[in-house]
Image (tube, rainbow, N blue to C red; front, side):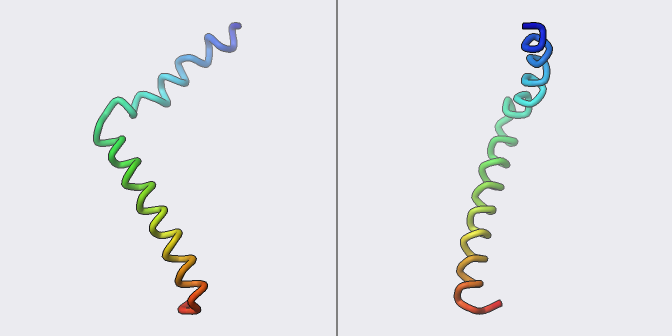
Length: 50
């Protein structure tokens, strides 16, 4: 039980940035850009352009 209590501040520390709207938007935009880049890189590779 002591380990669980000791881990709670770490969880709070990790979730604290999610309280800000601009950081949530930044995470969504980063995920979207990553998805687009992944799809485009697969397409370009399969097309033989690289």
